[in-house]
Amino acid sequence: MTAPAKEADRTLKANHRAMWALGDYPVLAADIISDLGQILVGACGMRPGDRVLDVAAGSGNAAIPAARAGASVVACDLTPELLAAGQRQAEREGIDHLRAAVQRNEALGAQPFCALALHHLAKAIG
Image 1 (cartoon, rainbow, N blue to C red):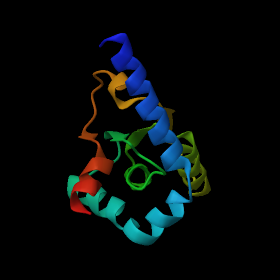
Image 2: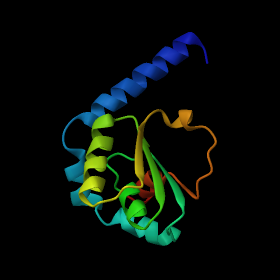
Image 3: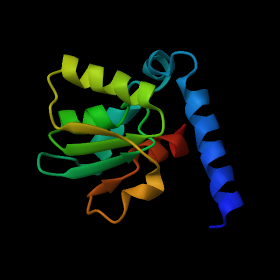
């Protein structure tokens, strides 16, 4: 990637991060798609011992139900505020096998996971 393209990519991601940090997305998601994460987890047949990567996890709409099912979950997102909201919810529920990572999705590298990008599956539905 050229230097100008790298700078444009950094700027775009910074703008996205700022946009998603505006308002109260966790409340909006809870009102609109609160059941969808659990539906996805059930459809994927997640169980204890599974490893899940939720790309663009936001506040954990899919990651938290996956962790509730016993999966070890890595939730990544560009927006620290949303990940922090998800971490707080996981802590309130006593979930200790959900790890949040503020990073670019493409920086994840090749890691073995049994389910990938639950958030994007949810977007395809609604």
